[in-house]
Amino acid sequence: MLEDSTSRADSKRMHLISMPTPFVRWLKTLMAVLLPLVLIIGPVRLLVTNEYLAFEYGKADFPRDPFGFDQAQRLAVASANFRYVRDAQPLDALAGQRLGDAPLYNDRELKHMQDVQNVYQAVWLVWRIAAGIVLLAALALAWRAETRPALAATIKWGGLLTASLVAVVGLLAVIAWRFWFVAFHQIFFAPGTWMFDYSDTLIRLFPEKFWFDAALTLSGLSLFGGLLLALVGWRWQPQPYVTPVSDRSIISQP
Image 1 (spheres, helix red, strand yellow):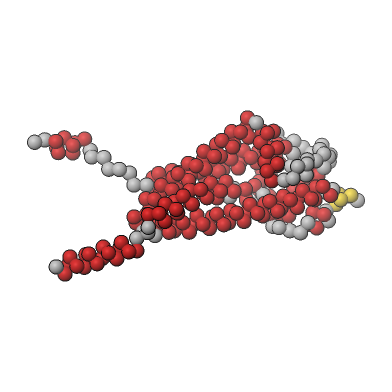
Image 2 (image 1 turned 45 degrees about the horizontal axis):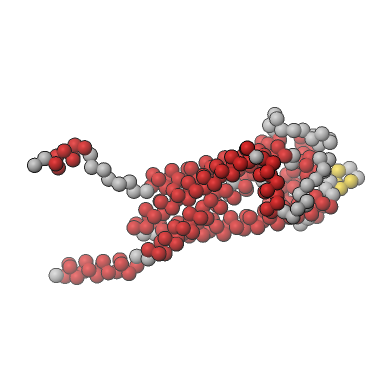
């Protein structure tokens, strides 16, 4: 009798602290929706590094600057440009740069770089918020054994959703690059503010080949991350038990 009472009390206590099903469903949905943001925006940070610049500029098919930058100059100027965007430096960090007696960037280029920094910092803020929410949701679902299968399923489907989105966007970049490139800039920048002459410093540093390669690199990294996460979720998710054939034959015997 005492054991039954204790068992019922423990069961009641477990029921009281169990996570409500609607809340679990809400956490799963939130996490699945935000995972693509985390996996797609995250690799952008790798593309604004000196290492990626050196890798890209070192490619045999990367166009050389027809207006005079040698490889070392180009890398140094582009690195300073990336630091301005990545580290939220004041615009003077670019406006004060000179090539001989002339400013390195004209006013239109400086205005665009200010816009680029604003977009980058806003996107990176979104990434930090999304990553924090995903982490908290994952911890909440991992806290109790009965919700861990839900976490595994969410990881799997979030990874597959990421891979699907990236595959579509990456394929569009390959088969319709010009449309993709223009659409991207129209989403984030005011019309006409992102178009420059071939002799302008920004085009000399970052010709269209740079952006095409960056789009493919970002797509590849995000696709890999999504598929890897989907595999982890699939392996972690409990698999239904199938009775072995030999056991079935034994059970079916009279």
